[in-house]
Amino acid sequence: MGSVDYRFTIKEMPADERPREKLIKYGAERLTDAELLALIIRVGNDRRTAVELSQDLINKFGGLKALNYLSINELKELKGIGDTKAAQIKAVVELGKRLASLEREERDLIRTPGDVVQLLMPELRYLTQEVFKVVLLDIKNQVIAIPLISKGGLSSSIVHPREVFKEAIKRSAAAMILVHNHPSGIPEPSREDINITKKLLEAGEVMGIDVLDHVIIGDGIYVSMRERGLI
Image 1: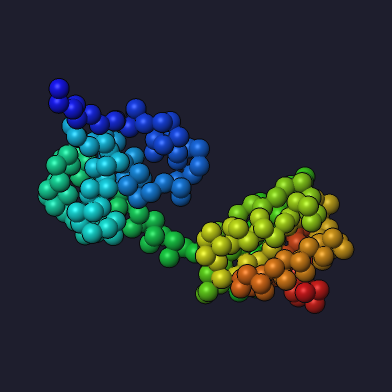
Image 2: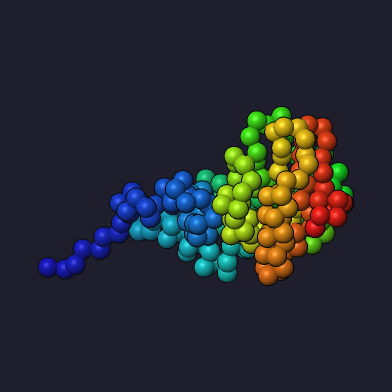
């Protein structure tokens, strides 16, 4: 008796290996290019799963970057890619281009502590608990992201260099500015604030990521540790 040629569909894959479930559980950054593309085209053909078909597409045209330049008809050269899948791919590529363009146009530029305050004062001045954020900057001092590191108070057990620099490394930041609020509305640095800042400065020197300042936000007022000469 001859062997039966049987291929698993995505639904028959282990749950943790299915692209959608992986994205929900672990985040989009954990998916391969083929898995991300599979979520767009959704289904494969009679012999290939959506993931396999996506990998075929990437391989055929020499990498993900080629999707920027391919026409609808060129995408349809691959068996299993019809008008619908080709249009979905082109739409996502175009959205990516537009998002990249917006990021280039709208990134905030940080020149002074006041620029940081303008960004974060509206969010932080009325909070009833302390939160600690980092303003991640590129080599031109433009804001890449402002991730939340911790809530509930500033202490060495909560604000650990590992957590702070994990975000900076993940986003390829060149520098950062530390920011937290004082719910009392009075932004005077505590001894703990100063100690944690010095620890993060030392870690930044080791990691090659400059810690430019630590800004403490109160109710309509702020303190820059750099301007105070505390760091």
